Amino acid sequence: MTIERESLAAYLTAADATASDAVALEEAGYGTVWLAASPPADLRPVERLLDATGRIVVGTSVLNVWHADAEEVAESYHRIAAKHAGRFFLGIGAGHRELDAGYASPVAKVESYLDALTAAGVPADRVLLAALGPRMLRLAAERAAGTLTLQVTPEHTRRAREALGPDKLVVPGHGVLLDGDAGRARETARAGVRPMLGISSYAANLRRIGYTEEDLTEPFSDRLIDGLVFHGDEAAVAAGIRAELAAGASQVGLHAMGADPIGDLRAIAAAVGEQRVPQS
Image (cartoon, rainbow, N blue to C red; front, side, top):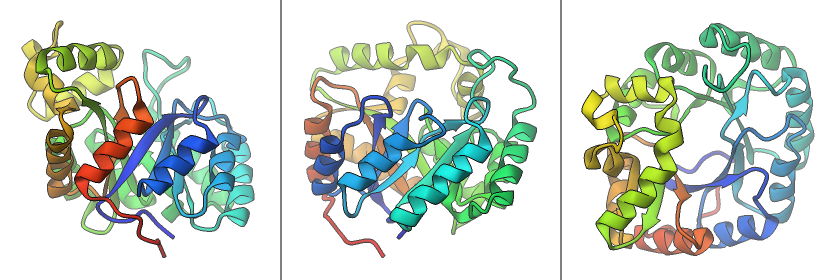
């Protein structure tokens, strides 16, 4: 099994995701659940969701290489892979200077982490990197199955696809919000993305793909917010997802920002026309 091309994925917080959430998303036709907020190295949240479901893929988005011991992660990977062959992807990332003590040389740190995973027998085609800039994208192309990205737009996806080539996985993640009041939706979206826009790596990447200091300065431009968070009715959100797929996304990950995340994700899947298709 692998990630189904042009499928939908859902982001759930690792600490809060429940088995019933995963079952509901599988029934709605989602291809993957990505567990956010760096699950622990024992990967028990991943295992719990896989045990409860029969088809859906589960992945980490992402394990923080500064906090999750690579040897323990590799042991956990093998434990899960033995029970759920082909249904687990290991997403890893270098964290952020503002948040991680000891942060330095992120590309070198990810390279050494990949070395440890490889030495422990974790196959490269089950590993994805959180890659925004050119150097990390090159590393994803050379040593992983592809890349997971957050706080991006279709323009970054287009560049990532160009950097990785046609065969690698490119999985962008977006906030989604079902709210027909554009002003209210933008304010909700601003509140959701504000903490991340204060992180230098995200801001630098947005500058690379064409956003200005005016866009990135509080209260943040409508253009920026509309690029990062798909909002409106189901059809408007579906149009944003189609734009990501047209830019080269293998799969689009959705983080529902409303009061009923699972209900919103179901409605969006129906609008996009997702269907439960067995993966092989």
